[in-house]
Length: 175
Image (cartoon, rainbow, N blue to C red; front, side, top):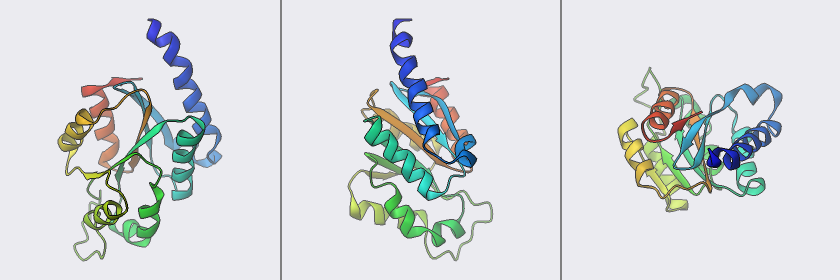
C-alpha cells in the first residue's frame, strides 16, 4: 500500500507529461500498460517518428528517466523508406531491442531488414540487442537490471502490442 502512495503520483505525472507534449491526434496511441521491475511500461503505436523522438526526449530530459526501447517495424516498406530516421530516432535510449518486422506480406526482396537496422544501430552504440520472438524478448528484459529509474517503450504496430501485454502480465504488473 505504501509503495502505491509514492508511485501513483509518478505514474500519473509521467503519463500526463508525455500526453501533453505530443500532438492531439497522437494521444490515443500512447498507452501505459503496466510496470516491470519498478519501471513504467508504455505502448506507443502508429506514431510518426518526430512524436516518438519527442516522447523519448521528454522521458529522458524532463522526467530524468533512462529509456529502454523495444521496436518492431510494421512493414518493410516503412522500414526502407525511413531507415535513416529509424537509425537516429532512438539515440537517447539507454538500451534498444529490435524485433522482426511485422509484415504479413513478408517482402523477401526488401533492401533493408531488421538485421540491417540492428547492425547500423550497433555500429553507433553498444547497447542494442535483437529478439527474434516474444520469449527471447522476455528473457532479455528479465536479464536487464531494470529499476524505477527506467521507462520502457514498446514501439510499433503488430504483434509487439500483444507481446508487451503478455510480458507485463508474465513478469510485471498490469495497470
